[in-house]
Length: 165
Image (cartoon, rainbow, N blue to C red; front, side):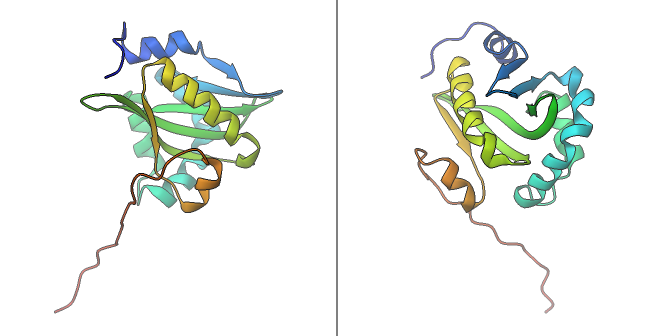
């Protein structure tokens, strides 16, 4: 059972990360406030769209945009010297006995250069808001970036097509 947390998840998140946290020399991660999405959207939409095509089966960036502005999901922008180079979409899921940070989408340029820093940051951020786990679904190739993560399940998918009788 997670520790009792004071305030809303958004308030706890804002306590933990003001708005920008350094990842490296010129690299930072920004938790984008819903009212600031339009400032970042043009810079990260392509990363989100490309990633969603591979993992969300027809989900378009406008659906994800809606989830962000309605606070169902969180948008994180990865910046290098002020230029967007990636984005993450996360949600916080409340299970009966614990809280989990779900990483739903990751996309960007030169991901191998920043993903390990982002993972380390996200783990710390998730713990700071009372999460016991981080979960994510991705292509098999992502496993190399998560060597200390367990593979607890497999997602089975099959496209259903109409059959002529």
